[in-house]
Image 1 (spheres, rainbow, N blue to C red):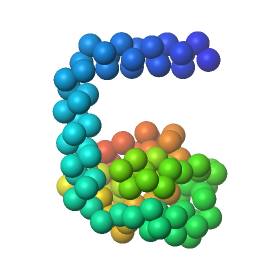
Image 2 (cartoon, rainbow, N blue to C red):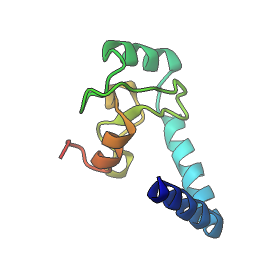
Image 3 (cartoon, rainbow, N blue to C red):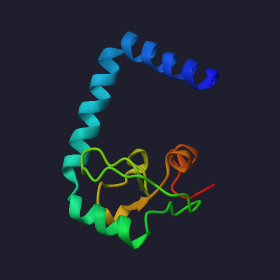
Length: 108
């Protein structure tokens, strides 16, 4: 737990010290997401098809069904490699697997 708390504090400090970078990233990410055509209904159907389970490890996933904040979902082809914010490019994914996958297109 102490490691987790230290990580949270580190991120908070970094974000405070790099507020301009954080804002630029957030604006860029939001603009990219608006280019897609994902709706809340599509996210709910995708979640239902996977029975609320991570496609990589099978863990139960709690999702946000907001197209602009799709926590609990992963882009199969990440934005960093030219992926689009479309439902065909998304899968249900737990946070741990999403972090492990990072910018890779294939689970490694």
